[in-house]
Image (cartoon, rainbow, N blue to C red; front, side):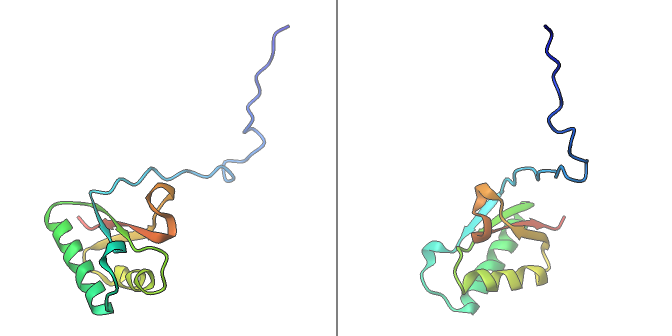
Length: 108
């Protein structure tokens, strides 16, 4: 007897099948974990220097690792949308730290 192969996704509409984002590959990374305690001013200064150096080097995708703490992550989240070099950003994907990091796209 010949078996008929059925499409297991046939029961789902196209709207229910979500598109998976491609894996984000960072050109450069900034990790706040090993820097000890810092003031908000120091956190912002390091972020600005990193973004400016990355942009000057021609990088388009950068990863900022903040950890899931209550100081660095909220501050970085509030600074990124205001930064002149940031095109867009989001919490990192599964392989890049999830909510303990940000995937950032720099403007062209």
